[in-house]
Image 1 (cartoon, helix red, strand yellow):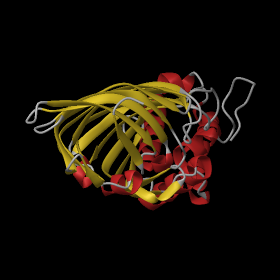
Image 2 (cartoon, helix red, strand yellow):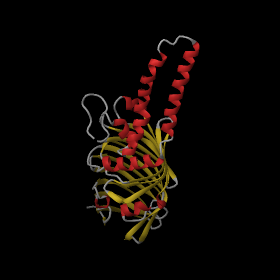
Image 3 (spheres, helix red, strand yellow):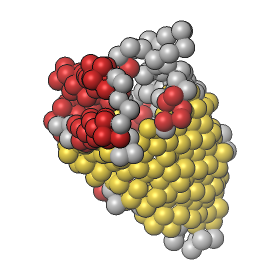
Length: 326
């Protein structure tokens, strides 16, 4: 939905933001929000000229009853309506498949979902499973015309938390600024990662990703990545230097994203049988396994007392490793 240049939210912003595009959701919004001021206006003449304490008390109890009614209508929004609204909004605005269950509104204003599945943009066959997620709007930025929210979710034995905000004012689509912090995520449980990378990866993930003006297809924007993988394995499609899998104690990755180029400043690998350092670049493709890479570095085999220079090219799905400098 396009934004407005007049410095205000579109008329249907609130129902679209909180209730998606579901027609029943629109009906609920009309009931809760639009009818409340209508009843207040209609009842105003009944209280004109009230000056005694009894009349003021009656007015106070009436307003209290209306506020409490609106509050409980908000909290008791049927879960099915909210779930359908979230699913249709995500598909229409971002092309993402979402399956939500046990969804509900919260106080402070926000939303909670359990047993949620979310697809990657352009990859409906790859579904990320989230145990539960809580999203809360940043009301200050919202009043300033920018959709912004905080989120916290539990997934694959760990947590993801952070914030996201649309880069443009008075719109529900467009580039996004985001910060995501990961802690204790067990990659062995993330079966979707096998489909994405076309290989099995195990280990515990933690770190931070920050992006600005990013789009779902990763063709715009910039950001930085600082991640750590601990105590895991990377399984090889073909044996590499006699290894069918690469066991590691720790892998540190520091990288910068500029448009569709991920510049990896440093990758440090520490393992029981192999150690290494690399740097280079990955040209991101909408189909992640087809992303092309170019890395240079060296690996050492402590048990053999050998250190070898390496260059790595090809794609993420089909890496080409060459011993020696190119």
